[in-house]
Every structure is written in C-alpha cells, then in structure tokens.
Amino acid sequence: MTLSFLEYGVTERIRTSQRKKDFLRYNWEDLPSYFNNRLKNQPDKLVRETKWAKANRPGYPMEARMMFSNANVPLGNFPGTTELVKSIPCKDTDQGIEQLKEFIQSLEEDIETQKVVAQFMNGKAGMNSESIPSDLLGDV
Image (cartoon, rainbow, N blue to C red; front, side, top):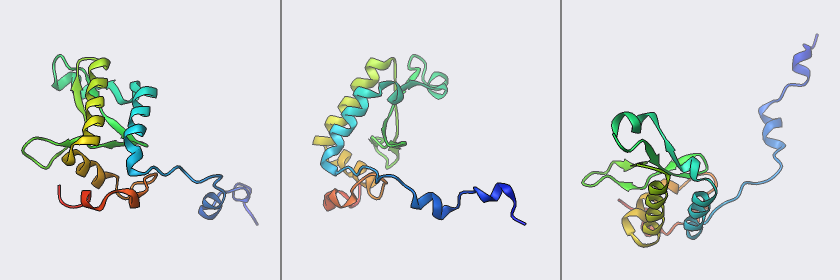
C-alpha cells in the first residue's frame, strides 16, 4: 500500500534535476562594481543596528558589513593579527556607507585587502575562482 503523502514527495534527485537556471558567476574584476551595487541598492542590509554594537560600542549602535550572496566578506585583518574583520561599528547609516566605500576602494588599490578577499572568495558559489589572480591566493 502506497502512503498518500509519499506519492507527491520530493526526492533529492527531483529537486536538483528541476533547477530552472544557472546562478550568475562573478569574475574577480567584477567584485568592486558588485559591491557598489549592493551598497547602492541594499544599504539597510549592509549597515544596520545590532544588539552587539549597542551593548559593546557605546555611541556606535550600528555595524557596517559587506556581503557576497549571504556571506559576510572579510574586510581585512585586524591590525597586528591575522584575525578577520567582518564588520565595523558606526554611528549611523551614512558613516557605515562611507566606511564600506573605503573598503571597496581599498579592494581596488590595497594588496593586503585583495589577498584577504581573494582567499575568502576562492571556491564560493557564484564566484568564478579561476578569475582570481593566483598571486592573491598565497599567504596573507
């Protein structure tokens, strides 16, 4: 006897075989414009008030972060360490936007920022990893 709820069930094979389109793949040289578009179109997602910032950074209730898909992109290394900086406390949305613009500019000009971002982006879904310059994938 077939159980009625199984008759219309979805298997892994069915789910993966019925995808309608391939997702976009971005090249390394497209990242600054991708980030600028995210900043222009979704500033409220990238700069927002957080409980952590309100509790731990008096006067700076918001955090600015850059995202690729749904992943927080590291902005660089914390000075003097190899710890990745994932967000920046800020007073308001305008300050957060300015800090993220500075990050985008450093992605185009600063080799250390490029290395951190390149190593993070390598292998990410939606990123054409072959377009990342190999000299950026070494040690940070």
